[in-house]
Image 1 (cartoon, one colour):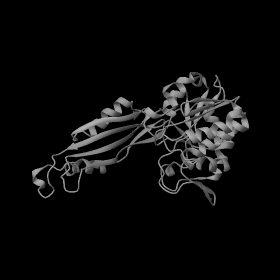
Image 2 (cartoon, one colour; image 1 turned 30 degrees about the horizontal axis):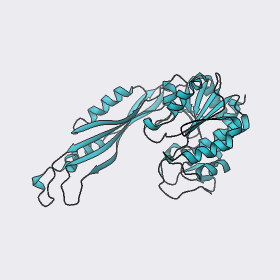
Image 3 (tube, helix red, strand yellow; image 1 turned 90 degrees about the vertical axis):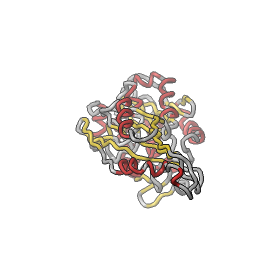
Image 4 (cartoon, rainbow, N blue to C red; image 1 turned 45 degrees about the horizontal axis):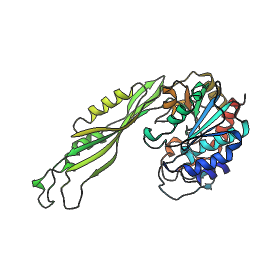
Length: 337
């Protein structure tokens, strides 16, 4: 709990993670710390070890800063996504040493894949991929979450013609032109894909919108970000093609960024042992995590960590203090055996 409060009290929005990385490096220096950009590898990577991975960044602040404890919960930005997982990683490394594990604290997960530093870490230390398996300590609702969705962000726009707002008939309003498209998007329902018995739900959402240059000008352009979370039975290329079809009525379509999905691994001995020891059911990750990057490079990986997924990215984020103990005890039992 004290370690989590310490981490939450260090601001670390994406792109501003140097302070938290320095703090973690200073604390774990006796275990051996290698730096890659703003990321850290604690312990010596080697065949047969288990990689514990967690990102140090948070989404932008949406409320008051700092940690606080109310009842059985610790509140603060990043408490559940995913500084709770970082706190567990820190204690596992300190208490068990690094004979069995390697801890990777990496930057840039909450932004586009191009800024995610797990990839550069794996390139700088390819021996990490010779590990037995990896555990990403994202929040999992006291479950073990296999696989993850992929994600595509597309810039979609509608073109109009500017005019004085007193004479709108002299132009074409790009915002109202987009009305049928927005109505269609609002009517989309989750598309269920059962994979290894796990119910991945594909969803497409408008997440940003911008148009117009002044209050008295008919907008000539209306631009949207469309976010698509696709299931692990699609490749990234297939997902892009599908999203392009959904957005076919727009005047323009351009991919902003994309990240692959990860097919769920449910039969790895380490993951089976972790589920048994923790009493966790096996679920799926309704969202994207770096399990995808690890799986794409051939390293079996699973999501398992403290916190509730529904609280991620929400104001008033918190984590149950007992969740920290549960995750720590479960991982320590498996890694210490």
